[in-house]
Length: 115
Length: 111
Image (cartoon, rainbow over all chains, first blue to last red; front, side):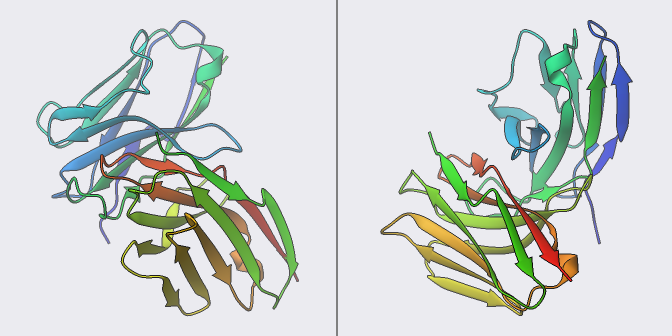
């Protein structure tokens, strides 16, 4: 069964350092999402791509977070500089098309601890 | 924007009993309502979903009901088993494709 791939699974970084996460969606999925999940809460959307274009980044803290999906396939989420409050699980997800009813499939997530 | 509220935040049942988790949403345009199960340290996995053109859907021991008028939907798990213990999230998606999640329900099934 095809899965969304993410790396690294775990990352510990010091405050003010840069950190990057990578995601490879399910083959053929046009829509890619980055979610942040703080322990004990539901996932919150950071950014959504349709192919290589950003369609929603209203919740992305753009002063420190950036995301790209240059060729419309894999994607990178970067945080620079990292802050203590960024400690969370960063989930990548994908869906086939940008419609209201397509199933969203999640990757295993990247756990970030900022110390 | 869409707001999804989920209750209860924790639920403990005896093995074999039923469990019900309820969610409400605010945007009447929402047309897709998935439920995800997340075990500790793992990804959320879709367990069942319902679209706005149906009122109920069942898959073995799991069922979901949708009341569009009242803007609420519920997850029903019958004959619960210890392996059902996890955090369950409801979500609602509206036309601009932004899916909003509830805060989650931690279900514990006691043997």
